Image (cartoon, rainbow, N blue to C red; front, side):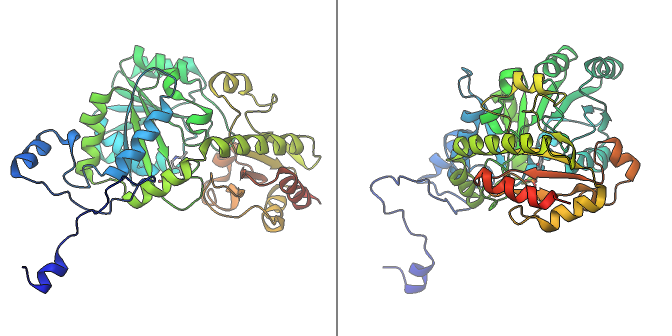
Length: 397
Ligand SMILES: *Cc1c(COP(=O)(O)O)cnc(C)c1O
């Protein structure tokens, strides 16, 4: 018999005899081996077992596999997903895994702000230069690819902040491949329910699962999904493991809990956003509405080709009253929370000119469509009548 203090320090054995119905949280840093031979086997072929939770964890792996299955659903092939600690972690792990000094990245100017900063101020320090160009202009993109054979990665986002401008995923993937580059996309806004970029030829997909995939605003996590399973394992999983950008099992578990209702939520996010966009479009106080589901959106046709089951929950609109009207909307709205995130079940409002873009030069900001009166909404799943009534009173003069 071991002593009391030894007994109290010892790990318990999992006593269950039947498997749990719901995915458990494996809050364990390591896994124990029955014999040293088993340990050696697992270390030699890490895929067949677990050794240490930075490399792989059963809860995290189960959720990553589910996201890979959603991104490839109906496409007839399997992809490999690596879950990481945040959306930015997904992007940085992908970039660090794929690129080396001297390589270049071709990207659009209207990326998620953090991504632009990461490319310029961090990747730049390692000798990876990013060329920004309007990726809606395929001739301009091709000119850049021809001029810079060092471009190894074409990185895009569609629909993108804040005007929900879209890029042609199939055309860009084809272009990238023709010039010996990979094509990666941030699919956070639409989620695979609305848009499956693998169907249009991309090599890598990244998500901030913090947003619509979780949907409840209670975890921060991200994921990279790669079409080439071997390459993804060799480059992305390896970078995750060595940079230590692994996802915590608790965050993965919360993500999975939210993801179970993804289809239901995206249906409602989309139908609510369309109803609000249509309401705003006919309102005299509104100068412009940006929603790819409206036929007035400049990319409506392209969006209809590459999106399905609706057009997602993100929209923006410009109030004629400028800064004053924008700030008034934010203070008057009762149902739109002023929180700097998106994709939650409740409606969230952002006034970029007074928040995310407060320190951006006004001319530069306006050139990117971020005017003083622009408001961005992440439309929630509330009753659309309540949302429209609230928005109506908040924009009334
Ligand atoms: C939020 C967001 C990110 C960053 O994700 P985090 O989980 O906050 O690190 C990246 N891309 C898009 C489009 C986002 O909305």
